[in-house]
Amino acid sequence: MLEPILIAVLAFLVAILATLLIIRTRRTRGAILLDEKAINELIRAVVENARAGKIPDIATRVSHILRHYLKCDRVAFLKINRNSLEMSHLAGVKDGSGVGDHISLTRELQDKLKTVSRVTPVSELRNIMPKEFLSQLEDIGFNYFFSVFLRNNLFGVYFISTGLPADNASLKFLTTALAFSLSAAYHIRKQDKQIKRYENRLKATAISDNNDASVSIISRNDLNRYLKIKNSRSLVSELIKTLSRDLDFSKAAFYVKPAENDKALISVNWQLTETSDRILRENYGQILNNINPGNAVEAEKVLVPPSAASAQGRNNPRGEIKYIASLPWIKNRRAVLAWHGERPIGEVDGRLRKFWREALPIIEHVSRYEEAEEMSYTDGLTGLYNFRYFKKRLGEEYQRAKRYGRSLALLILDVDDLKRINDNCGHQAGDELLKSLGRVLMDSIRAIDVISRYGGDEFCLILPETGRNRARLFMERIRNKITSIKLQIEGVSEAQQYTISIGAAVYPSDADTADELIRAADMSLLKAKEEGRNCSKLFEPGFSRKA
Image (cartoon, rainbow, N blue to C red; front, top):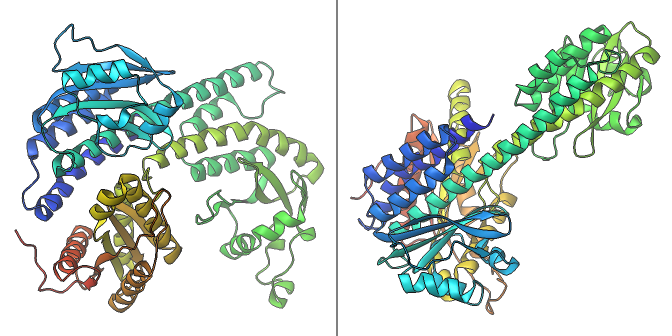
């Protein structure tokens, strides 16, 4: 089921470390301890063990990487098992050390672990973790921990012993990357198990129902075919084809609005002209308002011509569409089905309702799959898209811009002095700042723009149909807006002000490929940093990387 996604997600997540490490090395003047071997080893661990479904083996290999590349002479991983944290892996500790096998997972401890998004001193767990267990860890020499969690799902916690300071760039960067990779693996595996159980229930129901041909409209063969589809639009297309064949529709169209307001209608047009399809799309909301949920009516009763020209027969789908129905959809939403057929509506209505009742569980099944896949595109802290989604969309927008000869702008920005806020107010305050910045950026972009968290305190904005002049104006508007904000953080007495630096590049004037566009925008950001920060720079040919 989800194993291909699991492998792709994790392999991609760790593969991008190589690119990011180059950037981090440059900015920290060689402070990174990792080399290509570390990255390659993690990639092999993820791909080989994910394909075999051995997530615990990934955790073991992660332990080796921590010990070999981050000077962690002791590593312990405790995984969640119901209401306990159980020892899953222990390395570098002699037998008979006295470390317990498990501890009770209290609500207070769970809440604490879900707020730790980076490597943190073990001392922060005092008064939260059982004293005896914590004392055992400290006596052995464990001095840091980091959690493995995604959104609200906690999967486990690593304890490590290392002589590196907590602010070491390598320690912070790799532990964060490892934690996210593992949490993605655990989350997707969890979703995979749930979806498989759901599939089995659907199949069992179909087998039972098919003992009586009058009970089920969707055949067992069709059900097996539908369950192989993992995309809502593709599934709806197949359902409408089956329905049209079963009820003798000569033309049909289907529309439903996804839960997310920024997403386009899920739609299927079967044999309908483009003009009629466009008018039905435009009148989607009006149609739903004019039909009671679950009902089917004659099209003449709900389609109001949008113009005088329509009333004369042009731009009017009423000649193509005879009936329209309002159908239930998942999450308490409604869909529109329009069709042309010779069967009377009374004859069609009952069979249509029955077919759709059987289809809804399959639709819900695919929706769960899509949600599980979507999780791999979301940054857990800010709720924005993550680097993986950014790379996917940048590739798509680049191809679109290239095909149609359009401009495409890419902005990379970061917070100028996040360390100051982390040091003075705590890392939770820094996290609140990043979340606030994400909200400001979301409120400042168009529906067609894409914003993602690039990593750490960096964010990326993809701006289709945007040339150099508009990119320059947008950068300054965002920078000035951030500068004017006084951020009030809970638990911090004084409102915090901060600034950002922005670098941008535009296709095709500054780059020929998507990768070149990233490099050009990144060099522009470095130039902004070099010139004092709190400024924006649009790429110029003279910009270059410094060793």
